Amino acid sequence: MSTNVLSFSPEGAETPNLGEFIIHHLQDSHEWNLFGYHVHLPTFEPVYLFGIKFDLSITLHVVTMWFAGLFLVTVLGRLYRKPQLVPRGLAALVESIVLFVRDEIAVPNLGARYGKVFTPFLSTLFLFILTLNLMGLIPIFATATGNISVTASLALITFAMMNVYGIKENGFIGFYKNMVPHSVPFLMIPLLFFIEILGLFTKSFALAMRLFANMIAGHAVIFAFLGLIIVLGTVLVSVFAVPFAVFIHFLELLVAFIQAYIFTMLTSLFVGMAMHPEH
Image (cartoon, rainbow, N blue to C red):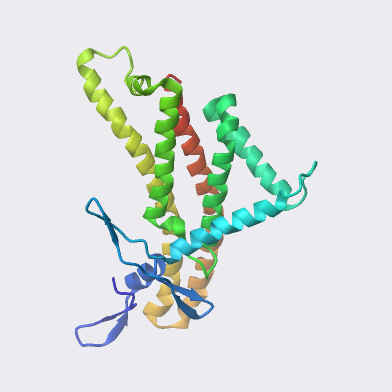
């Protein structure tokens, strides 16, 4: 897809294209615009496995995820390098987040026993998604959670946890047997079983699409407002376009927290339903 934000009219004159402008700023890229310097990221030949093409090239979204992971490992490592009886500052904030995830997300959905077991995983998931969402608001980075490949990968982790811990808690046969209510007519069992199996996939699909759509929508609105200045070719539009874009930008701060919470909460809920289908 072309990254040129200009299109040609039938008379040959160049006219701004708002759609191309928005897509250019939302899509992943092999180039990193770092304070005005265009850094070309490494590209590799595609790898084919069972006829499926895998592109292992480094993109801007990959770099953003690397920075998010490095940031969390570095900051959390330094905060808790020395145990503190009463954490202060940023350490107290992180501890409050972990306690919130444990008491309000993990334990209610997974029970007291597994809630504590899953708290490290769910806390990591929440902080990682939140960091990616917030980094997407920084001009030198991109919104990795606005990439369906990223959100689908996170949803696949949830899908794996649902099946692994569902089978661990109920046994292989018991896990799939409990998908169908015991009181239904025998002839309805195959249909209900198929629907429940499909439900395992649709839950993960919904997780991926929800995070992807919510994160990309706000950014699309911001670039739409800013793109009006280019399309209409006058700075007078900036009188209302820029304030609206700034307002949406601050609204995206709230969305970043909400979407990290929703993804984490639904992950714990879906895993809890797989482990305790009778509840």
